[in-house]
Length: 263
Image 1: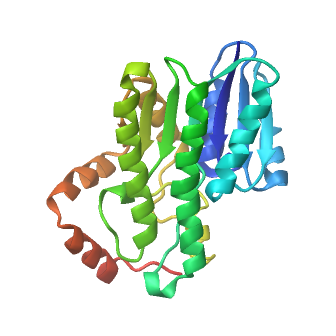
Image 2: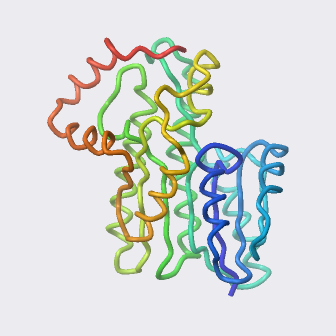
């Protein structure tokens, strides 16, 4: 039976790193890796770098945003099922973006699009993929360290990632008897193109960004061990733990006043 790995937001950043590291591992013969991202040329260029393993890499370039995006994934799965039985071994929901700045100074349309991608699409993709998963299957949902506390100047993004974290933990509890694990990756600053997108080009690099290779490697190990949350850096673990003792309003007010972000 064909075994499939699905990675969204796979053309760059942590999505591409997930693809590199998973591809580099020897998996079952005949496995397929589906890479999904919006930019066709960039996705194809990246996929061409994955060579040397007996894994077929297939690319699908389309917008994953919202209900329509999740339905595109369902269509892929439905089409594949017509050609024979298959199992999805691993789903990595990495696609997403953020916006910097106070809510009243950001574009409401962009904020709603962020919710559609970070929350709606992720939820739908999980729902459409689950019927194709069996015992031993894994889901990795990329959340954020921002999931642990409301953040000023980052309000909607932090809220979307709080949803991803909550949803992932609940889903892990529901799927325990089926033997399917769910892990929420909750990274702090990672050296990707995130800041450039979130700041509309005003901050080209993520401040104090960590190596995505280490973050992804740790997440894959944590997921393989059945961990529900992946937090790599000691600083991130401390921040997540200390968030339990900080009032939500105090955390949001403090970050609004003292953690300004270019936008």
